[in-house]
Length: 287
Image 1 (tube, rainbow, N blue to C red):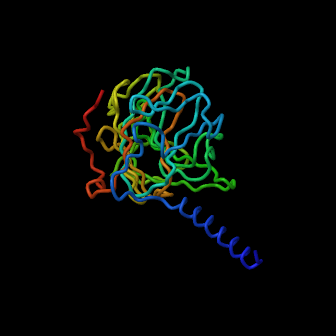
Image 2: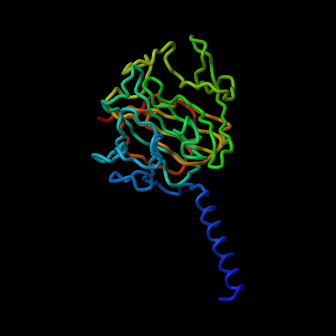
Image 3: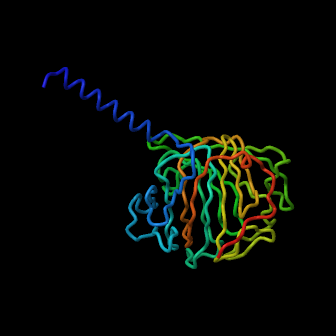
């Protein structure tokens, strides 16, 4: 084989590799409804655990009875979509199991969106830089910015603002008519997060819209450019504005409490999804 042919083949291989990397980085905008979870296995997802990386030797993540099951205990990590997404309406349901991490605090999990950077790049090798929609008891819909690193150790920018009012405990609550505040390291609580809530295991806030323990709660995340709107059981509870980044993987979090997820669906945005007004009727709660 001539030197010219060798060089040409090498150049072609570089082009193909670069093209594959570029394709991997390109986020998908849903044109039709996508079932992210097929109800049978974790095809389209991969697992990550702080202790073992992408290996799951203890079977922390599994599929049972048509739902994703995550064990409780000492485990910390997530399942992540293989693909990255932008401009979408995410809908899913979750419910708590019995197993806890052995502590006294509320059962905890979350949905992480616009996840970019390295697996384990945030939270002491636990999370990926992203925006977390909190699912902890009494805190469903709180927003948390998770900052961290990429695979090269560079800081990944994750930023947002929201509109808030100050509640009786002197902490912020989401209020679409309130003052615009940029994230500075504190959690942005959902609109009716109970003042002085103690966050003890299996307690509820006085205005919680999430379903009681053992029942399914519907979560919706409407990612529309720089705006991320969160609904719990049909009620709009929080909203991020000026969001960056505006695309990334979707992660379902294991925080050491047994939890189930099902009906994980991604839909194209619709005009009605752009409204931030409350739907006070809520959604039917399913056993």
